Length: 242
Ligand SMILES: C[S@@+](CC[C@H](N)C(=O)[O-])C[C@H]1O[C@@H](n2cnc3c(N)ncnc32)[C@H](O)[C@@H]1O
Image 1 (cartoon, helix red, strand yellow):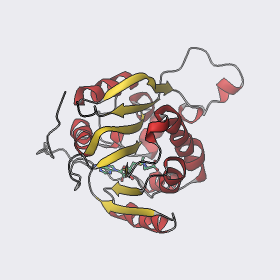
Image 2 (cartoon, rainbow, N blue to C red; image 1 turned 60 degrees about the vertical axis):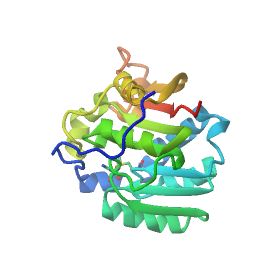
Image 3 (cartoon, rainbow, N blue to C red; image 1 turned 120 degrees about the vertical axis):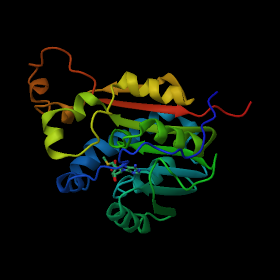
Image 4 (cartoon, rainbow, N blue to C red; image 1 turned 30 degrees about the horizontal axis):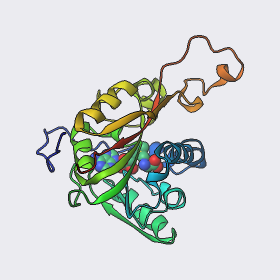
């Protein structure tokens, strides 16, 4: 088993590429909440099974404006929920959302590659659409492995290179160059850290919003070849104590 070390000294590449104004606005829309976030939360809840509900401490890493915080409280009912994001402006907004969640919900500013949390201190991690924003993806996943308690689960939802590298995403959003991966590559990276992913607890898909024509040809029954996978979901477990 891979016992991941603490925060590492990272190469000089910037850890964070600030999002565009359009991107920040889009993440606050009902389209994002309804067609992306709510579906991912419900799918990960289903894939995770009973073991992921009612845990003591849950983390929403890369929480952005905190749109997922009330959904996570509703679907997973953790005793406490902590949101973390690197962007100070997003953290401010997430704190406002947290204040209305009812329950023990708080938000901190930090990078996923240097979490100010003890080893083995979190029972469940929700990581939605963060890793493709991070230049040092291996370091980020090692850090998530470090803070997760043995037997705990990382609920990961990622957009793949096939979507992030489309002209429309390149035009409207900002990401670090050349680090995005295919669904299989994300799965291999997560497993290389030491996480265990049951093949029954991972799903790949190509939702309508990730298609260049927003699924128009699919709706009309005119879609030709099977499109490339653009989204991947997985429940990645840190092995329990022997
Ligand atoms: C696509 S948004 C997703 C936000 C949220 N998870 C959601 O689904 O609404 C990506 C988020 O990751 C944050 N982020 C980017 N790099 C980060 C890092 N190194 N550490 C923590 N957060 C980071 C950004 O500030 C942004 O809020």
